[in-house]
Each structure stands twice: as C-alpha cells, then as structure tokens.
Image (tube, rainbow, N blue to C red; front, side, top):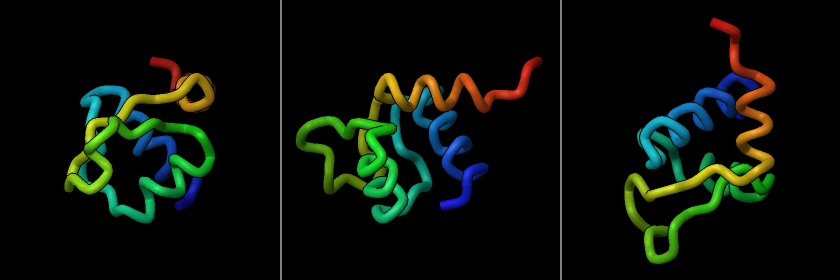
Length: 67
C-alpha cells in the first residue's frame, strides 16, 4: 500500500469502525504495522470491525489535512 492509501484506509476505519472495501492483504499489512486491531471473531468477515491503535491515531492525525 502507498502512503496515501494507508491514510485513506485509516480514515475509513476511524469514521465507520469497519474495514470497508479493503483486501485481506491490506488489512494484514495494517495490522502488521500495529496501526489497527481487528475485533475478535471478525478476522474472516468481509468487512471486519476494526479500531485504530494509538500508533494508527497518531499517524492519521499527523497526516490529516487541516480544514
């Protein structure tokens, strides 16, 4: 995933609380970098419930465009 795609994915997870329109590989890479946590029992779902870790929240905030 490119940097912009990662930030967009984190924004979707922060807004919706679910990993919508993301591949399993993308989810695994976000989880490998400790940016997200997938809810227990939802690992095999199409759009699993996810939360941002502290590292993920910091990355999202640092890369959000000021409005």
